[in-house]
Length: 230
Length: 256
Image 1 (cartoon, rainbow over the protein chains, first blue to last red):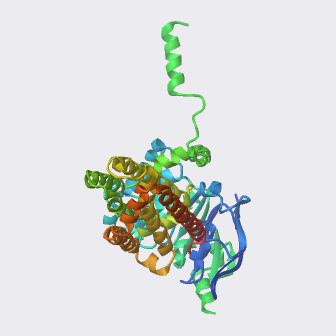
Image 2 (image 1 turned 30 degrees about the vertical axis):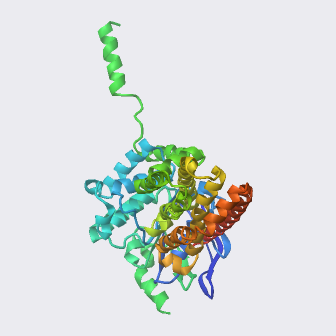
Image 3 (image 1 turned 135 degrees about the horizontal axis):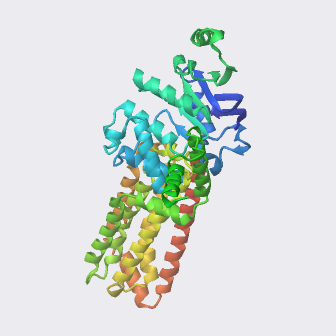
């Protein structure tokens, strides 16, 4: 299980959002840290095949991320997403299950299971537009987990979650990270400090630092602030 | 061994199997099953994919098309000039179809739909195909319906109905590719109204011009000129439409 990012760049007119970035991700949780505008979202969109890199290549087990067979093992939660106004939480999950190619009966079982996991079972028949920000975010997380992804990309997943939900979310991600590649972007160091096996730090589109962070290395937050101050 | 002893042994075997399944392996087992299913699912037929999309097309899109068919039936009766009046309605049909296939962008679902096994492009194509076929069926139905009252061949009638329809679709695609079009999702509605008005008010009152010319040609046995002209116009618009669809697809891939 290997997600390889090979000298990837993305340029918008005269702005370089991601600059010759290389990294290899394996099973486990990888935290992607960086200030707003560092290029995290652009990198994640390229990993999901939403954006095409200007140069470089991204592959999963040798398969380019633009291929359908890669998308069938991908789970993605974008920073922001909308919903068709007529959809309930359950409809939303069933719709994405259908797009992910899941048979109807299994989609129903999996949706119920995930609605329970993210604590939305009671409101599953209510329209998504009536959900709070945190509820919508939890629904997005459930959507990303529908197909039991081998590659799970989460862009600022804790935005809008209350402290209790954050703790539950970290536990859930830690569990998924045991058997899948999880890439989680955030600018809140505490979100990844205790669950990430690997850290990537981005600044101005470039990879500032990458490696494993152990408790013995001290505070990740202090290191992060030091690196970003310079 | 007595029957009772045998039964007891069987019951013991049933309730206490030698090797219980390892609960820790449950998730891994389910994952394998799911991955296998998904791999098979991505090889799903076009037929099944279309069926999935049919379910998610709003009822209003179907109803709008049927309403146009109903209005056509009402206008047609005993009205020999009804072709252009009905043709004026087809841009509205095109608008409904266009709006339905653009919902992903309008409601912010595009980014998520781009990352599923069936990508956003396939979804849009599927919706275009389903609604396009339905619209074609409606237009063909209208052409047959008005055949009794209008002195035009079915081909010519269909060409009259298709031209404003495809012009609206092409215009909407062109508009969608501009910054203005993307920030004004209902701009294509205004365009549909303009083409509708153009067809209804400019061509119809120009009856002395367009209709009398048509009638003269038909009466003199030169209807084939009109047919060839209509077919040529249709081919041009279809080519323009296809070029735009292709360009829009490339834009979607590079969407940012």
